[in-house]
Each structure stands twice: as C-alpha cells, then as structure tokens.
Length: 254
Length: 226
Ligand SMILES: Nc1ncnc2c1ncn2[C@@H]1O[C@H](COP(=O)(O)OP(=O)(O)OP(=O)(O)O)[C@@H](O)[C@H]1O
Ligand SMILES: [Mg+2]
Image 1 (tube, chains in turn brown, blue):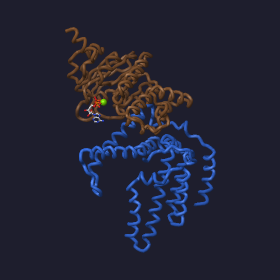
Image 2 (cartoon, rainbow over the protein chains, first blue to last red; image 1 turned 45 degrees about the vertical axis):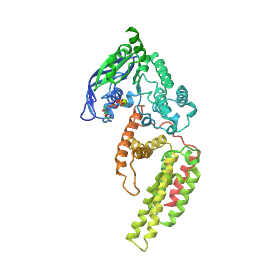
Image 3 (cartoon, rainbow over the protein chains, first blue to last red; image 1 turned 45 degrees about the horizontal axis):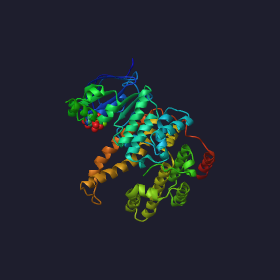
Image 4 (cartoon, each protein chain N blue to C red; image 1 turned 90 degrees about the vertical axis):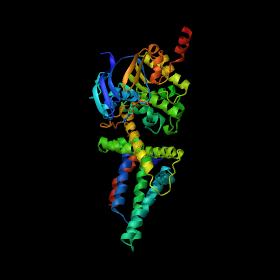
C-alpha cells in the first residue's frame, strides 16, 4: 500500500445529522492536499477522522473504514497514530496546554522519551523557525493570537511526523507570515512528508498545493489539481473565490 | 489564576512527590488535631511557607474572590447549633478550612502540572485518575477565562448583571464552553503522543539535597506530632 490515508465509504454524525456522508478518499505518500468548502461542511471533522480522534475520543455514529499509515483508526490508539501523524487544531487556544512556550514544543518529544539534549535542540530549532525563540520562557497565554497559532504549528512540526494535518493554519496570520508558513510546508513536502491542509484562501491553495478537495453538504464535491478545480467559476457556489491569476487569463482570452 | 507560577524558591524546587507527602502530612495534622492550640501555630507554618515561596498572599485572595465568603459558613452554623461555644468552634473550623485551602493552592502554585502528574503516578495513583485530577486543575483557569469572555460578550450586547442575583445566563454557556475546551485539550494532548493510560514518569523527577533533608525530617515530625 502506498496510500497513507485510505477512507472507504465513511459516514459520520455527531448526533442525528450526517456531517460526513459516503466519503471515499485515498491520499498517497508525499501528496500536498488542500481541503476547502463552506463553513460547517465537515472539514475539521474529516481531519479528526484521519488521526483517529474520531471515533476513539469523540464518539458518534461512525460507519466505514479508515486506515492511516496502515493503522485502522477504529482499533489504534490516538497516541499510537500520533507517532506518524501530527495535527494542528483549528483553535490554538484549545490546543496549547503548557505554561511556558518551550514546554509546549517539548511536550510531544517528552512523550516519545527522547533524550533531553535532543529535545532542547529541536525546541530551539522549531521556535527559531517561527520567530518565537526570544519568547521561549513566556507564558503562551500572553502571546497574540497569531503568535499562538505559530506556536501550535511549531509544536506539531517538532514531532517530525510523516503526515501533517492543518486546520486553517493561516486564519490568524498576517499575509507575509502565511506565505512564509506555506514555504515551510512546501519544503517539508519536498522531503516526502504528506501535508493535508484545510484552507479557505484560494490564492494560497493555487500557489502551494498539488490537489484540492472541495467539501459541501457532507460530501466531497470536487477533487483534482488546483489549476483545474479553482479556475472554474462554479467554485463560487461553494463559497470560494476564483484566484486572481485565473480571472486575468479568463479576461484576456475573451 | 490558579496556575503554576514559575519561581526559584526552595518550595518550587522541592520534588513534587515530596511536596505531596508533606501536603498529606499537613492535612492529617489539620484533620486530627482540630484545636485552636494546634491550628494557630500551624497557620504560622502556612504563612512561613508562602513567605519562602515568594508568592504573595494576595494571589489566593484574588484567585478565589468572593468564594472566600464560604469561610463564614462554619462560623454561622456553629453559632446556630451552639450559641455559647459556637464562636470558638466556628473560628477553629474556618481556620482549619483556610489552612487546607491555602496549602493546597500553594502546592498548585509551585508545582508544574507535568511534575504533579508524574508524581501522582509515581505514588501509585492510577494513571487515569491522576490525569483527570490534573485536567481538572487546568480546567479551573480555563473556566475563569471563559467566564470573562462570556461576561464581556453579554455586556457588549446590553446584558446587565445585577449584584446578588444568580448569574443563570452565565452558567449554562460557561459549562458548555468549558467542557468543550477541556475535550479539545484532551484531544490536543493525545494527538501529541500522550497516553493517559500509561503515563511515563521517567524524566523530570529527580531528588535533590533539599528533598533528601525533607524526606529525612518527615518521619521525625510524624513521630513528634502523633
Ligand atoms: N463536537 C461536536 N458535536 C456536535 N456537532 C459538531 C461537533 N463538531 C462539529 N459539529 C457539527 O458538525 C458540522 C461540521 O463541523 P466541522 O467543524 O467539521 O465543519 P468545518 O467545515 O470545519 O467548519 P468551519 O469552516 O467553520 O471550521 C457542523 O454542522 C457542526 O455543527
Ligand atoms: Mg473547521
């Protein structure tokens, strides 16, 4: 099997209403996938399925089969899957746990029982990567929203997982930080790491990812390379904006 | 907020396990010897510990806010039951409660959550119970934070809280959002490899000189007191 994520006929509901319905999806090792779609379409839920939080921690009505890195999410523990898969949650406030910036980054590494000096090296490396190094002794509560988001991302990247899931990682970042973040993600992807990111910003998608999924009404409506999916004006009915580069070509070809 | 306050005092430096043992010892004294003759000098110990830790007493005062009024309850109850000696017993019970609260808070203020967790597991508290305890500790400041947020958002839309009325419109959203955040926190921990069923207790806990002295003194003190 080369696919790191394989979802077969998945349906899920928290209560009565289906949040995901008849999802079939296979993602290969080394892909860079963007997931877009209107508010409440199930994007976050889909990510939580991919690392086994659903159905292990959040129970609901789960049907179908999901394997991540060869592990069946129904029978594997979240902490086990976390050795291969990292996730950055949508709200950094609910993700950050520690009372010192550096402890937050060290947390996953300590759980893996890495030696102390190695932990310290990695903590420094990833804090520097996101320009947070000068704040390493601060309380994360005192950081700005954008800084918290960077910290949450740094803490997940420090785990150096094979697959990384991001839930709207650029939502509180200014545009230059967002571009920088995607540059980092592209570099990771070039090294063979699978990156899956929920993102509304079609400009960022078209410039970075290699495959776009559009979710609406609990199902995957569109799936393909960004230049194909995002250039068609019909994505506007999914609440997405056609990126500038396609608008200008549409005009000039007229 | 009821949280670890970083510091370098001996109280901070003492090993989390040693601190838990001492806390248990102190609580035992308080529970078994409830007379003014014991509790008054004991209060001095509590004050001394706060002084050594460098944490201002204003901190617990602020953190618990109006909850401190609960300290009056035993006095009132005792007065009702026994008008002649009630005041004496009431004051003893309030002082007792005061010491219990202050000491427990001091333990939280001076111990990192992680060390506390590891210490509990080391002392054979079942992993999952320890995890629940520690999550609920982390839950308190979350609730305080949420409370402020909800207050602000309700005030912004013209809701006025009247003094001495039950803040029902606050409680429901507060419980809801705090529970939701606690769940998110648990998700965040587990998806970074934290296994609440098998907590590893290897690293942080290392006994230092202070700890050996404290551990040596403990049986002597137990012997002297009981
Ligand atoms: N813990 C939960 N319990 C019950 N219902 C939930 C829960 N989380 C999400 N839902 C519901 O599931 C649906 C999909 O939610 P989800 O968070 O996956 O959407 P999303 O696409 O990520 O939206 P957004 O763009 O706003 O983040 C929503 O209708 C939401 O109300
Ligand atoms: Mg979402």
